[in-house]
Length: 173
Image 1 (tube, rainbow, N blue to C red):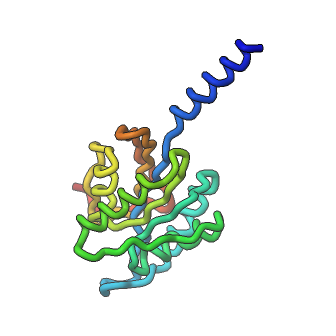
Image 2: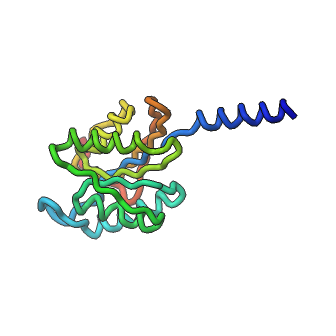
Image 3: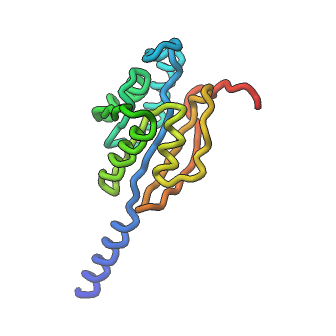
């Protein structure tokens, strides 16, 4: 009986130490225009729906966006599907303080949390790097289909990049 209890305790400790936060980082969908705070275009709305479908099994418990419409509108179908309220993280002070606030919020969450972050072309790579994923590539202005998925265990971050929705149409380099 003691051996069984000891084995169960060791198993529970091993499982707890193997827990990792899952952080999914995307850029907002395509914009309707070049104004300061545009809504999503038809393609952007389709991308927001595609994101919800892509994350159907991910079950985010927290969704973080910037306060701009395009990030909130991109997150909305996923938030509705999973009954989660999006949290807008202020942009006060520019990208640096915004990224720091996002990282602090992620780090404050339980080890088993799944977080969706909807950012911008200039913040998505910065957020991934700040969370420990050094391989995060810069994002061109024409790229909308990148999904960076990180698994955080302490200070270590393991990540992968995938695509969702319609392919971005960036000109060949």
